[in-house]
Length: 248
Ligand code: PEP
View 1 (cartoon, rainbow, N blue to C red):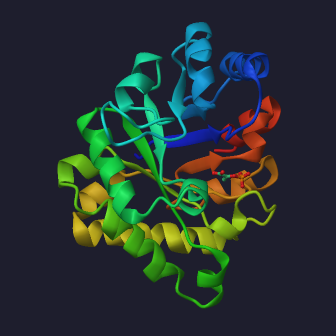
View 2 (view 1 turned 90 degrees about the vertical axis):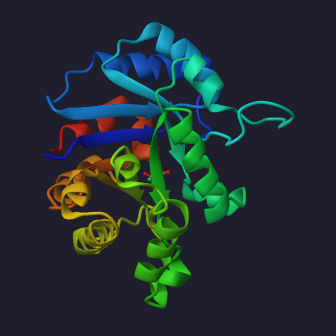
């Protein structure tokens, strides 16, 4: 059976006290067995959070740089992220791609750095609205995977979590329909099968992201190829985040 994962991307929200409180609240809630919970607070709060919560909640960073150290002002290395307790990173979130010009080539380097630096990661992919409107979403997402991920060996790809996040559904209140989500997730799994093997494709978790909320999570998570969610806005409220996690 595949892992079930609900991950909260807090983006550039909250200040220290609020962040620690939210993490503690989430950590103290009762959770469904077998559902892994992860939070991605702003980097500066990873340390105070990991000092104060238990290991039932995995804490990650929203981005990493691919170099190991040196003159890269403002960037964070994998060793630095791990040294404050981060066990996982987001790679290729659409906001990084769109606002900070992260290309498939740059993301390939981040993927390789994460593997050599031994940090888990969620690789994000997804198409913008103009691509969906012109019916090119499958080609677009496939190229994102081929150019940043599919150079990995079969052993390496098994460590990856993928998040499909249609950009037109992120922070817009517009969710992909269950059919749209399931179709893309099934396509991603079929490409994994073609490139690697059926066995490998079957074990890789594929999360959905894009205006996932307590009232639509159940339907989305019931889809055969949807193994959980990457949650933005709704992850900033304990009751909503937990309700989403308990939707399985
Ligand atoms: C996200 O940023 O990854 C996301 C899915 O945001 P939201 O849930 O707010 O659409």
